[in-house]
Image 1 (cartoon, one colour):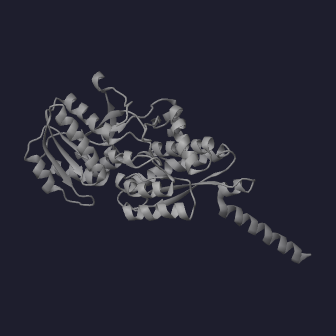
Image 2 (cartoon, one colour):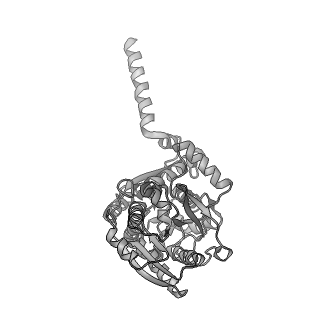
Image 3 (tube, one colour):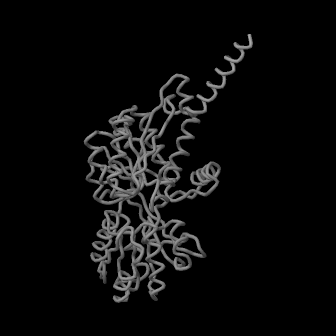
Length: 389
């Protein structure tokens, strides 16, 4: 009898450990239906980790809510997270693993346009949906039918900079840009639009990703005596550029791109960031956003981090497409356009153009007392992007 009790207790312990090991999604699957798996590729380590980790948190919140509501047509949702380490080769390896080993019909990623452009041909070749939350290089519209982006293209961001220049009364301007696909994309659109509007670019100065000393580049820009400097970069290098510019006596105001409008820029640049302007992809400020903010803080004990709302909406859009079109790449691909017609999330509406890229508008912001705060836009600058580029 004693032996039977011991055996019974062992079985209880083993069963308990098994439940803990497989996690809530797998437990739900044991109730009948197998999980629906999706892939995620982003910068989870390295200098660009603040972006990837933030996007991961937004995705995790969406998965929690989807599963709490019963999953997709009764199937629990699982996401397989892969780290591209900020490298194109690693992004390709991660994508290939997700497609060939995990057999996912859709992959979410990457944040960087360079990495997303590297993955795009693989997505088209394998006929697997690739949805980037925030990659925005204009060249992405050539990726093909299986590519989607949840953030407005750099075509629109470059034109938004022209509106800021006009508002500042600047007929001349300098541009500093990270020398990669993202930086070149924003710079090229801005230069073309600014010159078409009668402006003059005094200098377009590139700088290299991963560098820590930009004094040479800053001095070249300073020599042109620009009334305003537009800078496109990630938070790491961009903060150093701003800080070193102030140290070298640069007094011209900086206007940053969407990638730099993050708390990390202020943290890294310190007091030098005060007064820096920027553009931010417009998001709702009403009940939708407040609800998301509260739920995010409840889960992670912090306010939403950069682009977490876009990642949340990406996961929700993919889930709704799988629910409507079926758990296949083609089903998701076809349904995403329809889902985007009516979907509005914390990062805004998600109507898609013919290239699968979200339309939208921008907010203007400025660092005030150590934080990014909204600044009013003139009536002439308030337009929503409703046509594709």
